[in-house]
Amino acid sequence: MTEPKGRFENYLESLHPEDLPRLMHKFEHYHMLLSSANRQVNLVSRSIPAERFWIQHFLDSLLILECLDFADKTLLDFGSGGGLPGIPIKLVVPSCSLTMLDSVQKKTRILQEFVEALALGKTMVETSRLEDYAFVARRPSFDFVVCRAVALEERYVAPLRRLLKPSGMAVFYKAQKLDDLESLKHEVLWETNDPDLGQRCFIGIRHRDLMMR
Image (tube, rainbow, N blue to C red):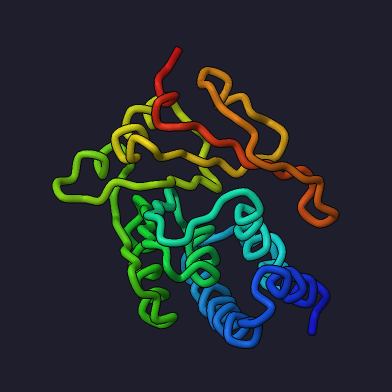
């Protein structure tokens, strides 16, 4: 067992000790799928070796569970890429309803293959820009929109507000720079200085605050 995988397994055990073998099997399958597909389509940075996916992508995706409970909630993963953070969250919190949104069709085609291979229930994949998806008829409204690798541009603010339920929240994975959030009222939900990931924090913007000042 490599050190990154060992650290991830220890963290997963802290979340769900009773279900660890099943969950690790699922994550091993996902790791294999992501590593293989990434050689064909640039889903995640190729500068990160596959053995680091356990920390840089899987553990990092799950840190949001330190501050939010997604059980039985509707979740939009905006700019999902290789299914991050949506798929790790879904594997650990299977009761959530997940929609993964990306504008690049070759990525969403692979995401759909991941959904089928991992037998993820209540999971949808959508190929669209956020600005267009916000106006799709009969689409769901969401309790949470999570953004791991997307900066909050002004053009996203109104669509995010439209996509969220009145009680909903957009949540951004951040390091130290918060320049893109300065024009909006926001709150730090949780932060840490991780030995492998460095500074990590989760910034929440509530539905009512998604208005440019």
